[in-house]
Length: 367
Image (cartoon, rainbow, N blue to C red; front, side, top):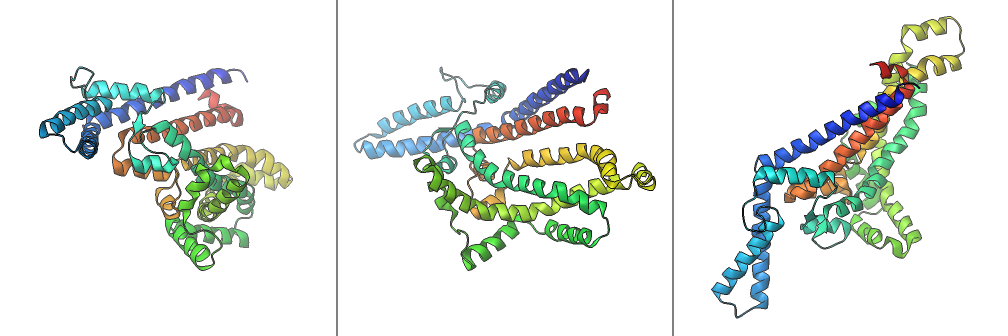
């Protein structure tokens, strides 16, 4: 297609610029408002106090002067570690820290986390690189949330158009009722109900998901057995999410197709007596492809952010749990790392959509 490559490159450049601007804006918010500095100073105090306590235990005969001298040394160390001062002890201005945060993020260098509640998600002791923690929890979110979204897509994509094409039928009314019911039910509430019924009452699925970490951390010791256990732990969360999300998928795709089915050119095609297969292929599928592809890709990309409350109910160590731990502990490095990865995923999803749009709807090249 002539001009398609040029359009793709132009869109990629614009999305890259948008991505960099978002990273800069985030760094401005964190450093420019003083939020990051307050967090760093609190972490310095916390770490220095822990170091002093350890020093007193290992040096029972230390004098107050020795303790004060050690405190000054560790304060200097931790302030330099968090970038509050340079090697000479001079304060580092917020705008310098801001640009450092931006450049490091663009290099996927989010620094280290010293929070045990965060490193425990990957079964390691602090400090740990933030990117290592994210790389450890991201596959778990893919296994639960993204897999559930993918199953919904596989079910809804062939089923919803057929239901829309037979608008007003019994199955159409069933789907509308199902969507109305489960769209009103919070996912976390459904998770608690399913855990209570299938876990505690019927004892089909596990109720204590903390043992999941054991199988994840020792996965390569016995991959076959550990895969079976991990799949067992993941089954109930995936079923819960599929039941909750499928209603939205069916209703949304049904609404998209229903709008197209009611268009004049489809009505005219039916009046001409064209075969339904030809009408579906030439008049419906081609038109509904772009919005449905948009819905599918953005839903899959959005699922990588995890589900904070639902993951908490199942005690699932995914991106949602990591995000919650990063926010509650005030770990700026982890917050920035998680936000960066999620924005990057969204930008890549948008770029994929731009490429697909050009081939699904060639008119996009001329807009």
